[in-house]
Length: 610
Ligand code: G6P
Image (cartoon, rainbow, N blue to C red; front, side):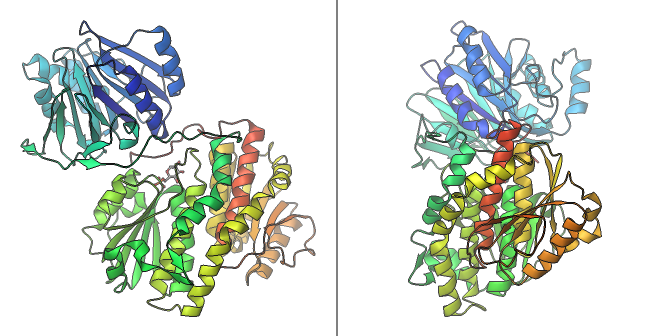
C-alpha cells in the first residue's frame, strides 16, 4: 500500500513529483523514491528509506532532474522498509516502475524471470513487473503493449506507472483494483493515486476505471478500457484547492485536531438541523426516498471508523428502533450474506480510500441492499464515487495518522442518520427535538472537556512506564473504550485492550496487578451502578483505576479510584464527549514515551491494500 505519482511536461518535473509525494505520505512513509529520464534520456533514480523528507535531502546532492518521471512513497508489504526495497524499481537502466497494491503470483513470476537471467535486487513483489515489462520490450513491443502484456499475467491488485528510456516522452499507467487518476494540464499531464497529489498542478481529472490503462505525453492522454478499446472517460473539475495545513501553536497535528473538534462538529451539523429537526435534505434526494423503505441497517468500516459504526449500532436500535449490524470490512467482503429486505448499507471511512471498505461496498452493490450511503470525510474519494448517497463529515483535512476529529464527526453524522431513520420509525417529534438540542450543545460540551488537558496530562505521567492497559465501558461506551485503547496502542505503543466491563470476570481479571492501569468511562446512566461493582472487582485485586465520570455521577464512595469529572452530558451524545479525554490521555502518554505522534511506526493514514 503506497502512493504513486507521475508526470510528463516541458519543465523539470522533480518538484511536482516531490510535492505529490508529500501529499501522498498519508498512504505510507517507510521509504520514498523518484526516477526521471534526464535530458540525455538516461534514467536517474534516487531512493531513501524513511520519510519524504529524507528523499528531499538526498535530492539536494543527487542529480535527478527530468521532464518525465515517476515517484513513490511506500508502506512495506513484501520486504522490509529499506532503500533496496524502495520504489521505483528499475530493470537494466531501461525501465522504471512504481506500484501500489500487491502482486499475488510474484513468486512464480520471479522464478520464471530468474531462469531467463533477470537478477532481482529487492524482496518486493513489485520487481517482477519491471523485469517482465523489460522482457516484452526486448521482444519488440512498444511500452504500452509491454505493460499490457505484463498486466495480463499479474494476479492481485495494482496501480502502476512506467517509464522507459526506449520511449522517452511517454508514460504508461494501468490500474486493476487500486485507484489511479489522470491529471490534465496545459501541455503537461500527470497520474497519481489520488487527486490530492495533483491539486497544486491542475483541477481537471479523469478517474480511471478498473482495467483501464493510459498513455500520457505532454500533448495527449489516451485511455484504453479492459478490452483494449480506446475509451472516453469524463473529465471532472474539482473545487479542491491546495490546502496547506499548519500546526500553528500546537506541537503535533494530532493535538491540533483534537482541539479542532468543536468547530469540526459545528461544521458537520451546519445546515443539517433546524428548529428541532434533522433535515432530510442533508442526505440528498436519493437517500431521502430510500429512507422511507429502510427496515434495517448494515454498517461496514475499518479501524476507528468501525468503532464509530459500533456506537451507531447502539443508537440505531435504541433510538431508531431498527435492527443494525456492524462489521469490519475485511470480514464482510469475504463471507456469505443474508440481506434482510429493506436493508440500508452504510460505509464509514475518513479517507474514502480504504481498500477493504471500498471492496465491501462494491460487493454490497450486488447483494440486494436497498441503498448505499457513505459517511466520509473526503469528497471525490473512491468510496464517495461508488456510493449512491453520501453524508460528508466536514472534519477538514486530518493529518495525524491516529484519527480524532474524523471519529467524532463520524459519530455526529451517524447520529443525524439515526434520527433521520428513527423519525420514520420509532422516534417521536419530542425525542427528535431533544436529540437535536443535545447535538447543538455538543461543541460547547467538548470545549469544556478540552479544558481538562492539564489534569489528563498529570494522569498520563503514570502510564509512561507501563506495558499494558485495560479500557472498560458498558453499552455505547464500550466502543468508546475500544477507541481509547486503539489510540493508546497506535501512538504510545503500549498494549491496550478494551472490554465491556461485565466481561472482566471472564478472563481479564487474571491480568490485574499494580502494573496494569485500568481506564474506565463512566457516564451517569443506568449502567453506572453495575460499572461501579466491576471497578470494585479491579480495586480489590490491586488494580490502578482511572475513571472518567459524569459531573453528577455518585462515585465518591469508590475507594482507590482516580476520578476525573468530565461533563454533565446527556446520555445520547455521551459517547462523543467521552471520546475526547481518552484521545488526550493517549496523546500525553505518547509525548512522555517520545514517539512519532503524527506518523507512528508501521502505520499509515489510509490503508489502500488488503
Ligand atoms: C487506518 C488509519 C486509521 C483509520 C483506518 C480506517 O488504519 O490509520 O486511523 O481509522 O485506516 O480508515 P478510513 O479512512 O477508512 O476511515
